Length: 65
Image (cartoon, rainbow, N blue to C red):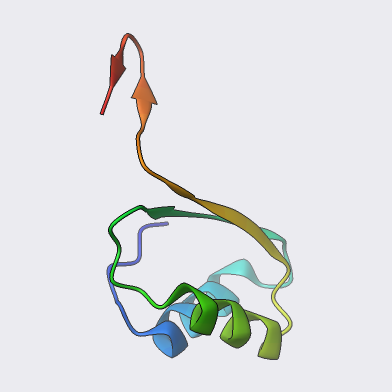
């Protein structure tokens, strides 16, 4: 699922709604304007189980983007 919002509360609420009790893997681009520590706090408040990372590059087939 792609979420374009930069509001941590909105993002956490959308993730909680879509996750429906499942664990979530988050991938965030390096230059995202999202407040990551705030997002983590919001997800913890909503008891969403998650793991994730910030990725500076994407590897696809023979290319690095």
